[in-house]
Image 1 (cartoon, rainbow, N blue to C red):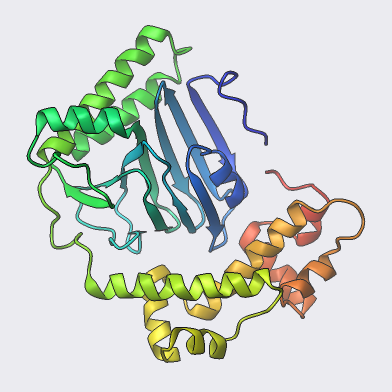
Image 2 (cartoon, rainbow, N blue to C red):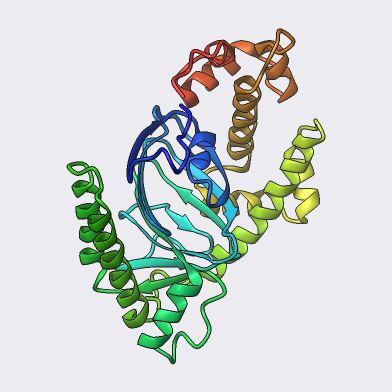
Amino acid sequence: MQAKSAAEQEPRQSWEVYDAAQQAALQPWIDMECFQLTGGKPVSTMDTLALGCQTVVRERQHAAVQKLGATPTNLCTLSYCTPAPGFRFSEYGHGHADTVFFMPERTEFDLFVPKGAQTVYIRFDQDSFAEAARILEPQHWEQAPSQVRAWQTKLKPAFAALIEMCLAKTDKTTGQTGEIKRMHQLLLQAALEIAATSERPHQDSAPRPALSRAVSLCRRTRNFAKDCLDADTLPTMVDLCAHTGVSARTLQYAFNDYIGMSPNAYLRSLRLNRARNALTVACGDETTVTRVAMQFGFLHLGRFSQDYGNAFGEPPSATLAGRSLN
């Protein structure tokens, strides 16, 4: 499915997303990669609501995904997730029930969103947002945060209800200019109130040293594995341990905290995602399922086809033939 240009879009857009790469592509304001880590079809259902320089994004995950990227200059987000054990926002765990996350401009992020979770965020113009927040709370907003913050706020239920009301209302309206402006103002004021009144992080949602170490170690491992795949080399556990300087057991514990998977299972998912991308963008007759499977280290073609189907809901031959629903 091709996304429409901004000029063609209605304020409210909804998609069933069948490819994690498409999930990222539908959010072009953020430089992001998205990888599917468990089976599920569709990968997600996604709603966006464009309100001028604000955008509301709601995603319901039918498959676990990892999102990696960075916010551009002058873009910040305020977000939350439904209660979901295993959810991780960079170095923060799933947190307290009242947790909302603020992510400022020029910030790298690494999210794990488990199957069944729903995430919601609003993107804002950070210069304008920080200026207004500074007026409301000069002490806390003398300088805007420079990294992800987990805030505790009793206003979260009202904030979530307001977002749901705005999304529901645009199902029944063509999005008149006056209505869009009022939604923009209401959501901005609600977000600013959270920014001005939020408590310091609850101990359940503060970064844990062990999780911070796991994230750092697994990022190094993942980057090394990605470089190996880019060079058509398949990394082994020996390679990973040698590169990071830790034992296999330490790496196992770290990946369990990081993504809820073993290192080998995670690397297999990365290779499956690489194979899917290669089959999706293939042109001409040179690309075959066998060639792609071999390229990414899947020597047993029957097992590759089975694992691919379990992950993506279709055989690799269907992806190559262009019969997928994405």
